[in-house]
Image 1 (cartoon, rainbow, N blue to C red):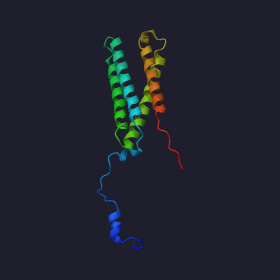
Image 2: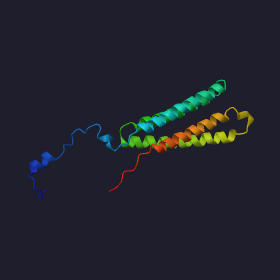
Image 3: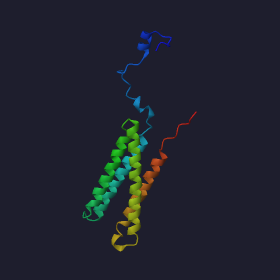
Image 4: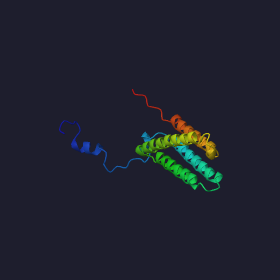
Length: 155
């Protein structure tokens, strides 16, 4: 400590106080613009909710699991969208990556359901819905890729 040119009193005054308040937007400086990602996740969630409602409706409201699954998947994607706009880098990363995993899982599940119901007369009414849901999930996954933040150039 004795090697400093400044007197001890000047060093103490220039050091930041541990009780100093940080500006609320300073924590968001390292968080990318989350609005496009949140919109994609929320839109995909609403899409799944709508498809679930339609699936229950075309079954005469006997296949309510379609509505419940659409609402559950939509709610999960909505929570991920809310995490991305939370203002903290860790919340953003959790929301984006869990959302990507959910979208990948939805794409695989709906693709598998479409493949299994193709050409089966008993499931012919559900096949177009599975194709649309798979296509919408793949589209949302592609939009998430398109809105991926660009890497900063290293100097």
